[in-house]
Image (cartoon, rainbow, N blue to C red):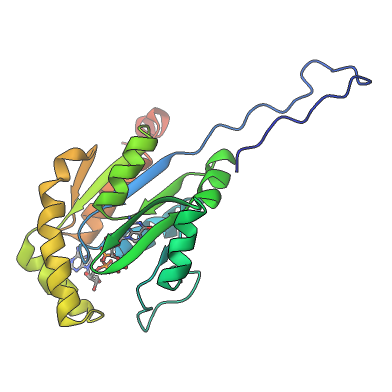
Length: 215
Ligand code: ADP
Ligand code: 5GP
């Protein structure tokens, strides 16, 4: 939520330098890539190294997977509740994906950014496009699988989606892969550790002084 300056009463004498220095705004990072490419896995590992990075929890009408928890992985809502959130302008972006709605709660994202915290949105292509329109400064990263065959193998190995849902996700993946040039950075998630290093180097580049200390 944006903070407004405290009004100064006419009885008060404003003292120079009494206002706190403005907090630098955090960075808005958008991570997009086909379902099953490894976004969640990668982000979990990145957050273990950088717990200060705030991962936005989305709202969805998709039913929870057995391992998922309300408020941790998603806020699980009915279709009607989701449509009400759109109506009330409470979503920063939203999209339909594989037959369900997904959206980013607006207020908490701005609260964190205004507090100087970096915020990561793990969202699909249509949502990433909406964010680009509204926030051109967002850092947009596309995570790519080494091949469509490997993507399918990962979705199946995850074992969380029905056959129909897998088919929809693969169909959507082809469209998403075609749009990767729209992004500022593309990282191929072939070797997980390497992809993690690339993502970390991009978001947290070593400072020149720490480079100098290296042999
Ligand atoms: P997403 O969040 O993009 O839908 P997940 O993080 O759920 O994808 O990953 C899908 C599956 O792929 C999981 O079973 C995960 O363990 C596996 N996976 C992720 N990255 C790799 C990788 N580099 N190599 C092999 N398997 C991977
Ligand atoms: P899943 O059902 O596999 O959790 O997610 C399906 C797709 O929806 C993934 O590509 C995921 O990144 C995306 N997604 C998750 N949350 C949001 C959101 O808030 N907005 C948008 N646009 N996409 C989301």
